[in-house]
Length: 343
Image (cartoon, rainbow, N blue to C red):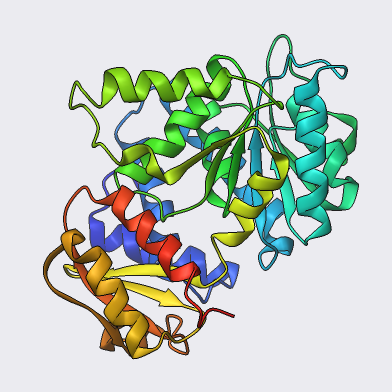
């Protein structure tokens, strides 16, 4: 097949898919298979092939782990692997995970010791999922998620981080080192750039702790004055030392807000409850500065949403949001969740 032209390659791949009984998502499967063959035709370095192969295998394993729990809300808890069991942070992580699990949330961790172990213990065996990583030291799968039906092991940090973020609709970060800070800043970057949909992010400390307050001070005193981030970019984050506030932030974010979709330059916010005309007017009065033009309008499903069968039964608000108004978007979502019409 080294000399195969694209049409011949596609035909050969189509034959393989037919023999394998693949009848759905054929274009995507064809693309993956064709890309793999092209990597071989292009004399790709063995190390590069090993990276691509391992990443695909790891993603498949993770997809299979999460698939049975697709309809269950999940929160990912990040934090140091070095936190000991007698540390107040350990108790805090276990407490917040326990309350969320009682409310029907599964708790996803990196399946290691420290804060990860604490969160898994709080959630309990049936409500904990782990995405561990193979390291030469420090991190071993914790006992709560050692069962392979609730844990998947990764070789690469990038595939692990993808899975720790992809499946969850809320995030809690407790104090930690380079790894925790890397994960926390990745969350903020995905939110700031619009590569991830809005999600609640909580920076949780022990009672009276100041770890995250130091970060908040650095952002306010250094990053914002340097104009390297927008003044409201940190508005999307709750900094707290209260497990109760953390739970309220995670669960309350989804009280009325459901999801969003961009249709051209129009942002569509899908809600669980239909706002009244007076509430829409109040939102326009409060958030007019976020708009490029026009108004916030109560609308039905747009044609492309109808064609995709995309949450067509939900009420919607449409608006034209200014660039880099991610912090403002979070304030708008908070206001939507606080409407009297919300269930």
